[in-house]
Amino acid sequence: MLLHVNPSSGVPTYLQIETQVKHYIAAGVLAPGDALPSVRKLAADLRISINTVARAYQNLERDGILRTVPGSHTFVAENPRSLLKSERVRRLRPYARQIAVEGTQLRLDPLEIVELVQQELEALEEVHERSGDLDRKAR
Image (cartoon, rainbow, N blue to C red):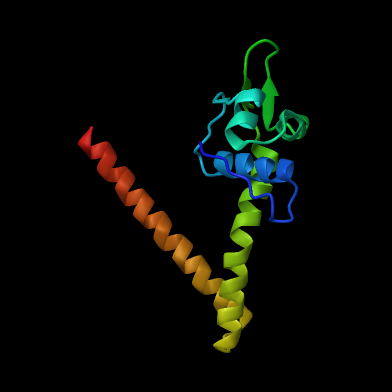
C-alpha cells in the first residue's frame, strides 16, 4: 500500500490519508485483517506530523473501518461494508454521470439509457457465469 499526500492540494492531510485508505479497502488492495503501518512509521514515511496520522486512524476507527489493538497494530476491520459501499458508490458516480450526459447529448430517452446499462450488466453476468462453468469443468 502506497500512501501519498499533497500539502498544496487544499484538502487536509488527514482527510487525504482517510480517503486513500478507504479507496484501497474498496479496491481490495487492503483486506479485512490486514495490518497498516504504525502511526509513527507512516508519519515518518510521509514526512508529516504523528498527530495527523493519528487523527486519520482515529477517524477511520470511529467509522468502523479500522481497529487498533493496543500494543500491536492497526488493522482493517473485519466487516467495514457499510462505509465501503458508500465509497464504491462515490467512485462510480462520475461514470454514471458521464453515461447520463452522453446519452442525453445523443438524444436518447432516459429509459433507453437505463436499458443499455442493464444490457451491459446482463452481458457481464453471462461472461462471469461462463467463466464459472469453465472453472468447475477444470476441477
